[in-house]
Amino acid sequence: FLTQFLAPPSALSSLVSAALWEIVKQGAVMYYGLLEEFITSVLETVPELLTYSERVQLVMGLRARVRKELLDVSYCNYSDGNNSVIHCSY
Image 1 (cartoon, rainbow, N blue to C red):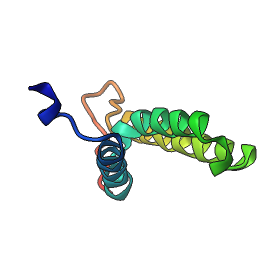
Image 2 (spheres, rainbow, N blue to C red):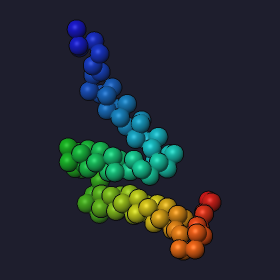
Image 3 (tube, helix red, strand yellow):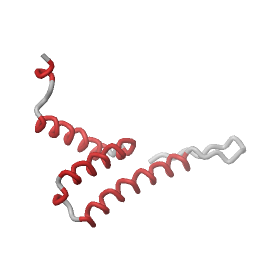
């Protein structure tokens, strides 16, 4: 009964890949941690997809983007104590 609800592994990986690609296209930084975990998992399974330096560059780039977003949000919500709040628009 449950087997009719389960997708074959190739279909499931295609679905996950498509969802993660949407994260990248939309710049949904809040999900970049999930993206990093997926990339790490894939590269542990198939390490020859990327060289070590490409892998490090990709993961560090994702982490840097998340940190930049956190800093931007933190700065844009900054209050100087005089009830003045800096609002940013991009």
